[in-house]
Length: 115
Length: 115
Image 1 (spheres, chains in turn purple, yellow):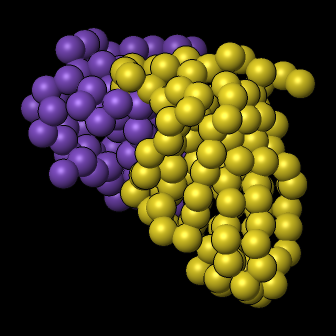
Image 2 (cartoon, chains in turn purple, brown; image 1 turned 180 degrees about the vertical axis):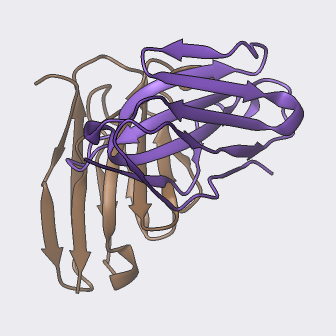
């Protein structure tokens, strides 16, 4: 069965610290897709990244980077030099090719960045 | 209209009442989804539609129904609301529901309280 686990419920850091949000997934499919979404205090969900199961290259976008490791079924998200505006709930999600289009979300990690 | 709109923004409802949450998208996306967000559980799929005229059940469909008469609209109906349906409801859409590769775009959400 498919499952996404974000073991960190809440993380609090001081501005400029680096922080890593963990995501572990379970799936029996060989083709699947992983996503990260951000939910700021305003409540909307903002798409951050999509990764497919065939591409294990890490990705960097500004202060954000993602580490995808199939061997450990993990898709971790690192924010470098965190800022107060990074404070939000972050969701990791899984979509399987055989379960077309349906996103399975993790429980979410609340990140608080203090000035 | 730009993206996905949801109405109402929030609603307080007496148990046993019927309620329809509205969702409209202007991106001509084929697939649409309804999720509920509950603390500690992330987002869970209620119902989905891969194309106008078709619908399917998600992870938590009981007590909810949907219809997809056209591409743009995807209303969610609670036939007889119960307090456990108190939640934040998000509508989402994607270009297609036949591939898990597509990112989903989310509406601003509807906060529903059932007393």
